[in-house]
Image (cartoon, rainbow, N blue to C red):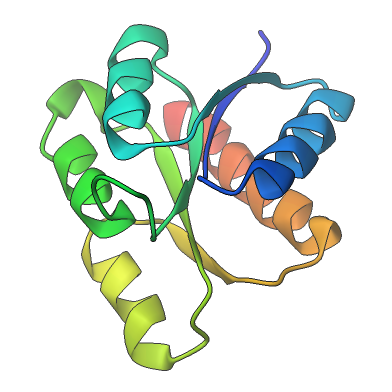
Length: 128
């Protein structure tokens, strides 16, 4: 079964690059450019993994992450926070909100793919 990924970022170039990368790896991909759109797509599509930017125009990624974590139907969803700040406190904040991992922008597409594959493999292992 194809794994699904939701890419949430308000920067079109980042969204496009991540969408193309995930599709090239065979994942089903949805994209959102706002927090409200991300939450709606999460409920509609139930992705396996969300790449979630912390800075969005309407709601920050930390709030979105916490909202998703409050929904028992979404407990399987892996969340990778993407943050422009490399400050340790910002990375820890994302993990404290329920993210499974965090990446600092700018990041290499290789590091994104490595993190995505590791989390999805862990998810598959968790189900067995």
